[in-house]
Image 1 (cartoon, rainbow, N blue to C red):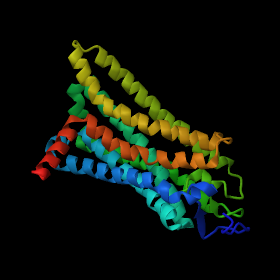
Image 2: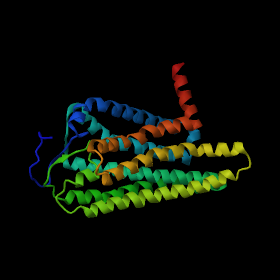
Image 3: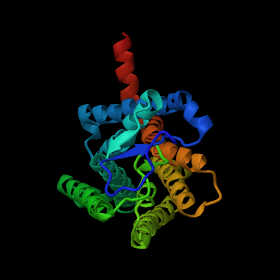
Image 4: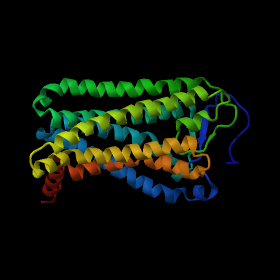
Length: 317
């Protein structure tokens, strides 16, 4: 850390990302990069496979799989927005990042986190209509409606995160240009500003609790109605078959929300937690959902699993 300038300045042209801070961990960056790289490769291959299968399989052209494609694109952007720069730090000690590039990375990161949460809400709504009102599913979730939902979810993420960037761009930075993180996380950047940042803190917490909280409430209400409908089915086989269609979605929700909330809350309130541990958790949780989602849906969704098996079997013959 002493190799970098920490004297006073205003509006730096570049920031310095430390990666995983701590002398021992900085020396071990190459080893730390190995699981990160493996997770990223799995995320890229898995999500592109989902997109390819849904595009080429005509029977999968329905709302459930359109939302899955939106999730795959979001995961690809989310993981790609942080990992290439993180790997350049781990492998080549390339720690500098342009001020505008840092804010751009911050925007894409938080925008697509909010967008992914919205997609999970849309998928919960799709399952609710499919199970609780199946006769109207095709008339409610038409292709234009699915497109409007996707556009609305994307606009919500973009508009809610934009104030983060506009405010961060206007602040003076006169403490240091060193960010003890592997990417430009919002709170890690704003703490460098020599200005009153309480408004930004309150707004970020409002987005976290109101947006993510409301999304979780909507998902919980949807699945309460879904479970009620499942328990009212006449046979055990029908209940198992219907509940199985929701299993992959519930697994993906748990893989996204639990690490996300844990990382956000520990970063703000876990002052006694070691910095390198917080940064490591914050880096891992952004790669976990993009890696796990295609695995979850590939294993638990019969249509995708069968298409994958046919694809590899055909290539092998």
